[in-house]
Image (cartoon, rainbow, N blue to C red; front, side, top):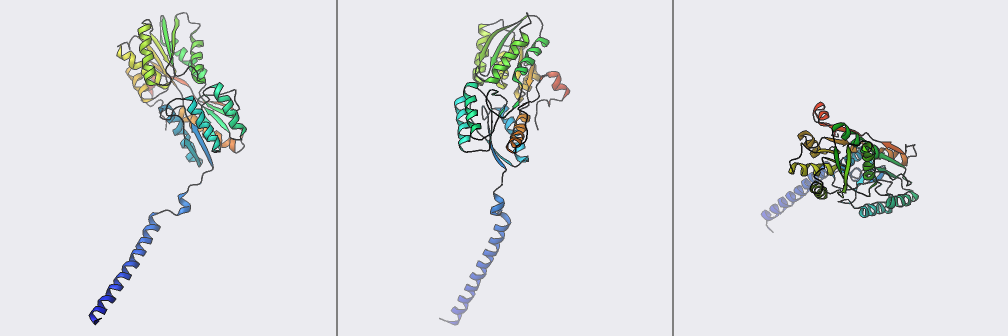
Length: 332
């Protein structure tokens, strides 16, 4: 091999070694500066909880989830949000059973049906997993606490609002989310009790929407065809009032028909500003979710918790929106 070849070979080798060294050096810097250490990448949680809603994508339940996640973040709790995409008691029950089988530290759920949920909740609690009901109670079960609306009282408030806001004969149709869910039954009963002493108010029909926009609209449409004398509606779920209003607007009867709905979804507030919906029952879903997580932590840690905590409930009208610059019902 010639001297020139030896020099070239030596230079090439040195260049290769320097390049490798630089690559390793800068590669090390990239890794250590941009990738977290393994132990810090895995966040440690105090407890693992699950929130099981009636419907995953329901805007009302998204507010419950938002409150629960806020509390979970504050108290270093892992919170899962799982359940049926559309209201389905069987799927709801299966989610709770699977959660119990996976040995979560606590379950937060609606108590939709005494018949199905009481024995289910009792079995879960017997396994040592605490259960809190939220939004809807199953008072006969061994659930450890309930946080949410007093649903009978909320229906009663709606009935009293209709009495205060109307004059003359009121022929009322009620569209309720479910005939079988405890909270819907209580809202209807509260409303009926509030108006039963008023001789000018008559309940003409009670129909079920199955927590479905399409069904709520279909029922409202059918009621107006079958009972043209109806001049007032009460919708007991967040979606019912919205769809009743859409149908009433289609018939151009928004100035003739009184509508009281439930909850403060953006569409509901818009329809109140338009004057189609006259009033709505305000719940506090964010407060429910946040409070449920805090209560569950207290229960797990052996602290005393009130078995029933009723969140705020009130009636909202357009005058309330004006006073509060349209921010009523929003949650931070």
